Length: 292
Image (tube, rainbow, N blue to C red; front, side):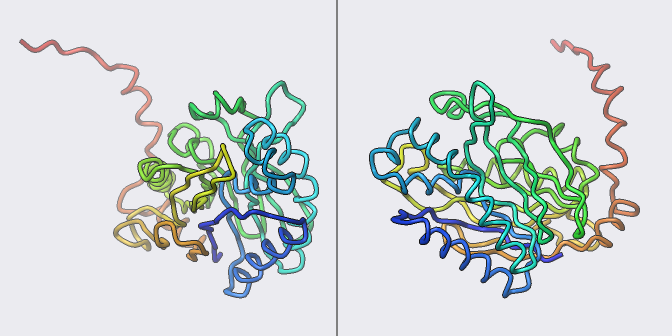
């Protein structure tokens, strides 16, 4: 499959039609370049809060509520575009009031056949816990699609090996991210690359980019798109299939070949995925060695 992963700038929106035009242009560009799977970043939906004006967009709690209210309309738009262009889309994640005491950070997945499902973020960063008040949502999922098996680890989730291991059957793991500092970008990128190494699969990272003085939540953003695999047979020696330019908006494209993934899992130079379980008895038997 050909993957397009976004370095996505947030815009001030004066109308819903402006948002429709923006998203349609992004999807049309990726589809026009042959992409079959499009990945938008974490919290990319926060631009929808601008539709309620500066006072709402600039207030953390009000902006979260504003975006949550608009996600059903956003889903209808994504489903229409997925069908029109014949692509699978991981939409930009959003804080969603899902009936729990606190909102969750949710990314919706759309297919050209009209199916829709979602992945919630599992582990919250410090700022999501407070002051955002976002909670961990529903369980990890593997989406069985016509393109292959696809999982999602939202930003910070990619930094936890056991979450990645839970998606070991996935061919591709999507990593939508929103990081303020360059160090944050690299933490997520290193996580994405590590999960590709351990699971001998492809990971695709999307980022929010640019500065937004109108927002308390997503005012400063650093990142770029990237697509990674294990540095092994059939993959680049660096593990980097494709990468964008730091903080430059646009799509980054790369190929994820299911036969290559299956081959490296069966007969790679190393077999990290197969040998994972050999860690377990060894980590349970760690002893202290006191040296004088």
